[in-house]
Amino acid sequence: MRCCTILDKTQWQIENEYFFVDLPQLLLLKDQAHASNVIEQLEIESYPHITDKKVREQIINRYIQALPKAPEKPKMTTEDQYQAQLVRMKGGG
Image (cartoon, rainbow, N blue to C red; front, side, top):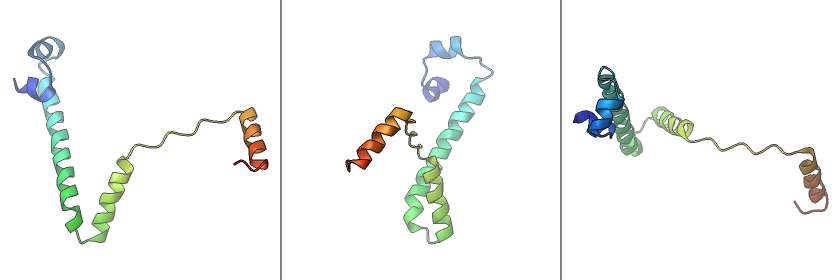
């Protein structure tokens, strides 16, 4: 039942779609992910009280690196570039 609860699967799914030898490893990975999340939440809670600037910067940089990257702008065709240059020359952009 612990597998069902932690992996958010039904008993039928656990019995028929997973190998029993893999379940302990899956539970361990899920527990590690949960522990990592709890530690991150503790860091966030204690962040304002950290006085060491180097540690604060490391925490901030870790969160910045975890942010999703902005999608790249689609490449403009030659015609699109030409039209954009015309608009700029006319003072519209």
